[in-house]
Image (cartoon, rainbow, N blue to C red; front, side):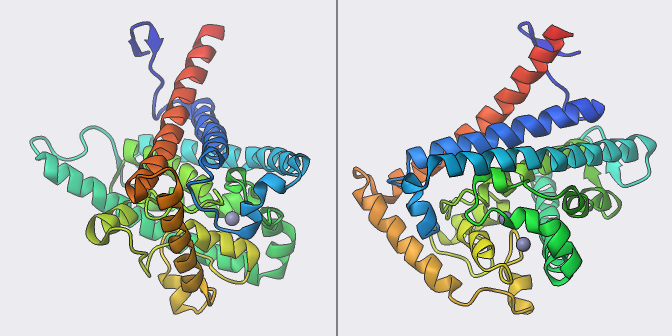
Length: 330
Ligand SMILES: [Zn+2]
Ligand SMILES: [Zn+2]
């Protein structure tokens, strides 16, 4: 067991179900709690995506508490399913059945830019495949009456989402949604560590998508960050926002995708009026940035980055602390 200054360093892969479950619980519950607590703290700055959320302070606190408790409990099933999927992926890797590999990311002597390019290419491919899988399985769960009534309805019980709505799913839905994490092992070579880190990170993406506060332009996906580097603060027609999925909870026959909007556009399932609404939110964002004690958009972005950085750091620290507590007890 690796250790540093008396602190046990937990493994990333290879720990089986207990380690996978510990990782997922730390990232999901601490991440959701951080987003739930931090963003409303800056609520005068960060723009809510729905009028209901704008009235959050007037929502009965007991109702909100009940919803979060229900969502937290329901999330346990999908977390167990995902931990099982991680175990299956570990098995695929150790048996050499798929295209997973261990050791160096690229062949010995590969330059840092080559490694960065390989990593970015893998993340973009995984984002595209995850979005495509999510879009069509999500559409299926709405078109098939049995699946909608008996499976997917659980997620839609959250009319006004909270960060804990992210994995508030039926276990059957979790099996369907997370199956692509196994399928990608057979499509192209992926380093085992990249596979695990990426799919832990998607947990935070699902939490952020239900934040109920608009994170644009810093929606933390690679393609969104590349778009910001290219076009700055403007909204891309092709990329999702928090508002986009929030509208799906209000209008369940629209906006099925996760990262990109192309499938919704091609199959005409995008909510008419989305562009107008995101335009309104961007205007409100600018007003709040100017009115939030000065500093303009620069301050606005620093608040967003603080919230996201703290969420990520707290999730990692929670895993480290939970692992060390476990080692100490055992
Ligand atoms: Zn949702
Ligand atoms: Zn849905």
